[in-house]
Image 1 (cartoon, rainbow over the protein chains, first blue to last red):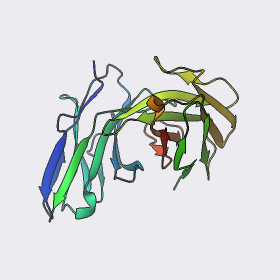
Image 2: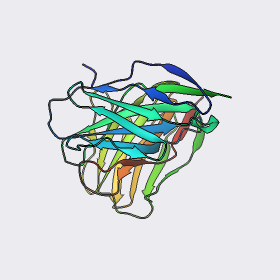
Image 3: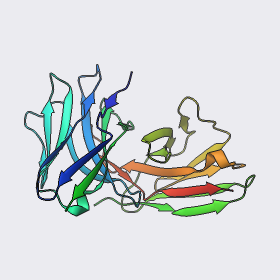
Image 4: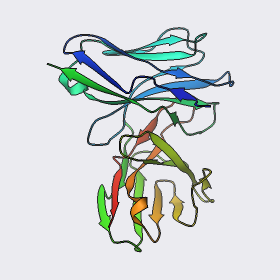
Length: 115
Length: 117
C-alpha cells in the first residue's frame, strides 16, 4: 500500500489566488513527520514546511500552510497569493519514527500558475 | 542553512563505463546520507542509505554491485554507477539531515542528471 498519496497529477491556479494541494498518508507509527518539498524544473528539492504528528497547531511558513487533519490522515498544502514562480512539482513526504530514517515521497503534483 | 553539495550536476557517459557522483555536506556532519533516484516525471525513489564507516543499506531491487556507495567521512558520500547502461540514465539526488530529531527535514543536493549513450 502506498504510504503517501497525492491524487492530483496537475493543478492550475490563477496568479494571486490560493491553491490547496492534497496529500493523504498511511502509517501505524504514532510518531511521524510530514514534509512538503517544491521541485522546479531545475531539479533541486526545496524544503517548504513540515508538520509533526504530535503538533497541535497547523504549521505555517510564509505563504505556505499545512492543513493537518490527523484523524483523516491528511496533510494538505495551502499556498496563498500564488505567484508565477510557484509553478513547479510539489511532493508530499513522510518520515516514520524518530530515528534518522529516510523520507517516503508521494507521486507529486505539478502546479501551474497562470497570469 | 544546511547545504548539501552534489557533483557533477550533469554527466554523459558511454555504455560500459563507470560514473562517480559525490555528495558533500558543507556545513554539518552527516553520519547518514540517503540516495534517491528519479525518473522523468516520476517521484523520488529511495535507493540506499549511506552510513559513515559501514556498509550501505540498499532498498529491495537495487543492485548493490551496480550502485556502489562509499561513505568514507562525515561529510562525503559517493555513488558509483558501475558499467553503466542506457537504462541507468536517470536523475540521482542525495540528501542528508543536519540535525537529529523526528521532524528535522532532509536537505538535498541539486542532483546529477546521468545520460548513458
